[in-house]
Image (cartoon, rainbow, N blue to C red; front, top):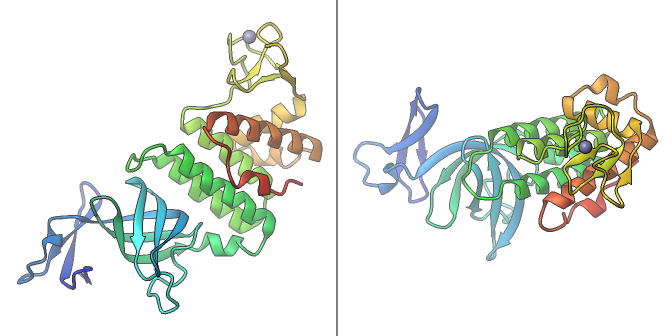
Length: 280
Ligand SMILES: [Zn+2]
């Protein structure tokens, strides 16, 4: 079993609990480091955002698989000689060893699982779509350390698809946003009326009312939407990509506008990344 060096310079031995699939660290015999009292944990996550701290450090915000959203200090990361290199850039999927702190955790070790952020950075449309995904993931995880596994899996899947570059970035983004909202409790009604549940194909949108509404429930001033846009939204939500890719530009633009309006309504403040988004 590989031993790792903790931030205080003591060797720690890694032990895995098969039942809980967690990794804990204990001091190698003879060591007196109190890090052995399990304030060190391992998790994998996607870097959502980084903020400069002091001269050479950064605070990284990560959505992790098991722990939820955490903020951690990456020491010396802004130095060119940093051992972290570019491993903690936004959009990177990393395996992290973290040292639990009172206010902020500290990154002890970081290994790249997939460099989605740097792969996507070369293409403006994909880069701006990824920025909206990362910001949305942060905003939809209201509290730190609340596990959000489904959101995490959606984010990794969305970034992987963007990085592969085979599908239009705005469609990948809209599919992610619809599903991310749904797993966060803000699912948009697309089939039955959002208000009375009347089945059928309705073509009025009530953002405040939770989605598509029937003619009777339609509030004053509600927007009319096209059947093509509603069908596209439904396909994106269900992951029916063959169908979604057959949609035309008009439906895509309209569906994108609906998703953006719905997202903005459910977040308290507007997204910083959204105005930069390049829509076809
Ligand atoms: Zn109704």
